[in-house]
Image (cartoon, rainbow, N blue to C red):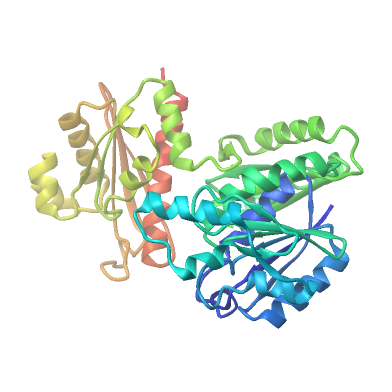
Length: 412
């Protein structure tokens, strides 16, 4: 099934917002077996929208459109449809009642502008919006079934999953299977080199790569020519994991911090962190996962030398002798945060994120880390990262978490 994605909104054509809706829709449609023909963006203009819909309806079996369904004067999707189909806008009583109920829950009065939300093209079927007020609708345009959804990502995504995904599952004769693997630890070119020859080994396979800094997403797609595509894709994934080892940490949308947290929980480990140059970024990543309080006990952001001494018990003589960015200070930080928290693991990060502060001996991007565990001397690692400040901080946080994951995997 050929599927076109249409985004309606002048704010998108002008680059004022990023069209994340198209990325979500393309990915989900592909996962369900559809084939994306094109992404189209048009401004909030009736004529431009109608022309795009007419063209897309001639060459696609499905159109998913986002935007232009609100109560304001620039929300013109329904008007563009009636302009194209030579039909009228009619008040849908069911949609109007849904708007009333939503306003009542919010404690807001019904206004004349809200009635516009329930004006749908004649013959269109409304699509419920459980997250907002503006209902969507579906109508036939040319040879295509066209679904119109709001532009608010939260509303659009839920409406897609509840109304469009089931339709696709029922209508599609699956022509392809796709699997996404997530990796961290090496660059895109290095990973691609390790996976060279994979497509020859598995006929019908297409391998793609996407940088989601600092991670690499590996897309494995088995085409319609491949017999028993789903099971073959499982064998491909096994081979990718064999070649890349622990660089592959998960599938689908699993985050790296969720992966690390899962390992800690499975092994019954707790962790505390002492951060300097990363300024709490490791803690932010860990606490982005629900339930992280099971394993994450403390994040001490000891940015100044004084706080390293006062909070973590770092010997000031070490700082004077070796500097705050050193193996000796990193080890003391890790031991200190583990001691005051009672965690099984203590991770520390201290470095120079830039743009200033570096020198010939310790240039910008120099980062020392230490990992302490009970009854063992803290181990240290030296990293040299390149790039601007936020890039260095993010790489340091990820490599620190990767070290924690390696330790958890080897835990005895």
